[in-house]
Image 1 (cartoon, rainbow, N blue to C red):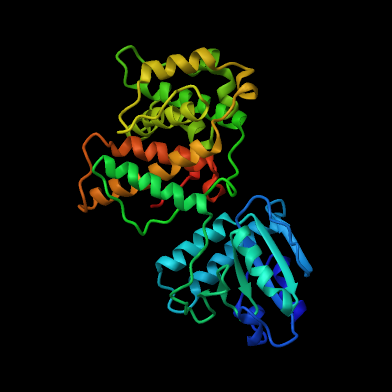
Image 2 (cartoon, rainbow, N blue to C red):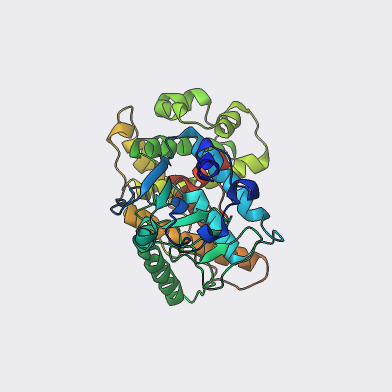
Length: 375
């Protein structure tokens, strides 16, 4: 049984076959005198110490190239349990697994199991048991091999994430906007891995390049040439994505591509704020001051700038992420005829800010062209 359990460190996904084992090991305590075998999936960047008697069977983080594939397989395992219908609990568990940064396999003596569950709460972890169940830090079943769950079970979030959610909802209520209380908290300070400031600065210069080019294609003065852009924004060309490079390579891009790249001014404004070049993010989120934004970046951008750039504190960026996630939900609901946010809350601006923020926090570890903004 122990060898089957340790197979989870070989990169394979959990399955009903690998998970099968002595059912007594599946609860918050094992049979008398027997150790509890657990795979813990923690979202925190730094694990709390395992300061209680245990046998460490394996430990890895995202530096292990097999962990990402294993987590993807684990998401598939969760989604296939029972009837496979998406529930709130299943959705929260899926998002937790996508944020996991640490995977630990341990054997816990029976007399020390209470200490383990306290550790799991500090690690913001869910546990995969040998009976095929996934459990919360209180040992309650979030989902079992048959798709059942304990109604009291809760996928864990750090306290700061719940507090941030409350602040966002309160702020939006001051503007007459109510969001669904069932929307989950988001990533917190103990979990986030922000992109480096130099990468953000380079990304900003690339956005400036494609946005300026897109705007010029609709200008009466005629389009800016690629040669002219390279003269002024040479460092930006090292940071272009495949989609952006393809856009610049087109002499006459499609109209929808021009519109999309023009909207990138709003993503640029968000990154400018994250880099400390803009003092605030407007709320309500109106269209940015494009001439002022371009001037600030042209005065700042240089060969040396990316290595000198600095980001705002993570707390400020996460506050913005939480707020714009909820705002984006509001505007999408309105597009479906459910609710009507104030007109000054512009959906396009909110979409671009949410997009840039998800990239900043490495949501689903997606590259810029592939960023998703689910709500």
